[in-house]
Length: 101
Image 1 (cartoon, rainbow, N blue to C red):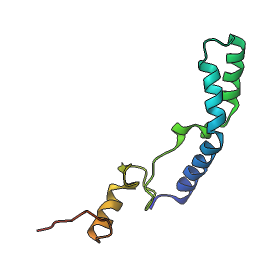
Image 2 (cartoon, rainbow, N blue to C red; image 1 turned 60 degrees about the vertical axis):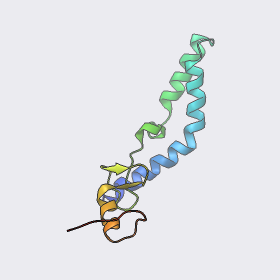
Image 3 (cartoon, rainbow, N blue to C red; image 1 turned 60 degrees about the horizontal axis):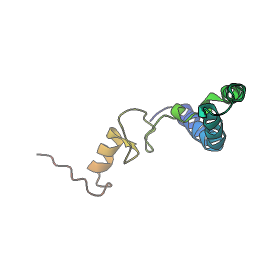
Image 4 (cartoon, one colour; image 1 turned 90 degrees about the vertical axis):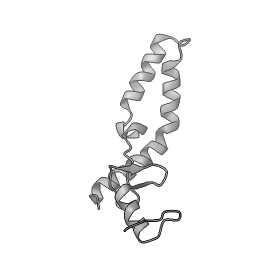
């Protein structure tokens, strides 16, 4: 199992991203808009810089939902390779047949 604090921190980041995604998208649209004045775009850049960094989607780490492991993560299954192997061995994942000889 991963550290509980790391898993909780990632959950907090997901929550922050969900809350601030609309405002971030709005500011980024202003920044990228070439037809607006440079002053307005610069103000939008400063507002974006003032926002919490954990509100950025790139700060989220993909973690296994079973163990919280941050590496060897399968996006489709939302779990790590180790958790997948354990659940596959016990027959809890449909469609996976573990062969041993």
